[in-house]
Image (cartoon, each protein chain N blue to C red):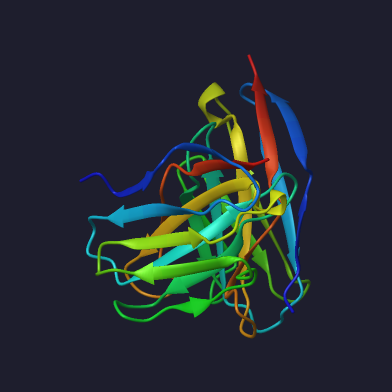
Length: 113
Length: 113
């Protein structure tokens, strides 16, 4: 079945610097890769997603890149701000199995002022 | 719009007690989901409902039952709670299938003693 590995588990960056979170997946048939942000005490919220027909997608300070050959995708946050502090989850589609969207273990991002 | 609401926010049970977690969405979404979130692990799907009147098992359904009462409401029942069910439970909904944006509720933190 699909395994989604996410690294690092914690990340601390200075305000204004960039942050990168990486995920790898195992199902070569996967076509959908969302990223969710979870703030303290709240449910996850979709921040960006990418489908396999493109290699990169941007939305203001957030970008996601996808390498289908290597089966990995990454979240890039530029010009980080204190409000970017949260736990970030990647996810990948799984064609077979009861859970069609498999989540990574999460990355706790801390932005230091 | 309230989005996805969940009740209660917190609950403490003794082993063997039963309870129902309530979830409602006001976005006219077809699909609804129940996940559990445990430290260091990704969200794991317990049950989902692709449309009113249908429910399917997810990755970790043992010890749980669900009811899709109508299009708005999707409840999760623990018939005989066990300490292994201590977790944070999230309900989510999406307009279409799992490749559509999932909107999460604020979560229920459940402790089973």
